[in-house]
Amino acid sequence: MIPLLLMIGALATGATDPVVLRLERLTNCGSWTVAIHQSGAARGDLFSACHAGGPKKVTVQRSLGDQVSRLRTLVEQERFGELEERPQEPNPIVDDAACVIAVSFGLLTHQVTLTGQQLGGKGPELESFRRIWRAVQPLIPEPAW
Image 1: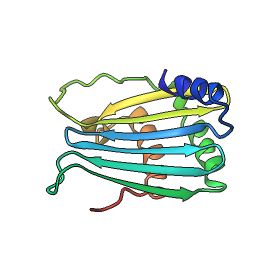
Image 2: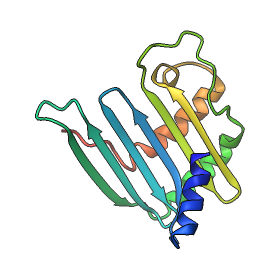
Image 3: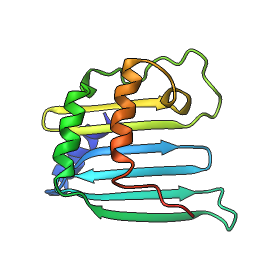
């Protein structure tokens, strides 16, 4: 749903460079969000409400060039559009992180949300999610404080 809203928002504002892949890790203390645009422009935003010196935000920007087409190929190979939007968590942990991948490549618009615990779990669907997650991380690495 969110990627669809991103696409509609981009069209409504006349944007010509929509977000095609978004990765988020949300915790009690903050978030790491990566937005990759069709052109290859990418931005990562790290926010921490629990930083020792008070709330802190860091932004990283990169140009990914042809990596966007490689990510699209990976998304298609992993059959991301067939993954459950929220796989069942057998033993949920209160206040666990949420890990989100949302894609909007052509006709494929899909979002999957896992818990932090599931990100380290077993199963073919979880492994497909992790392969995409791990492919994005080195392209826009989370900055260290």
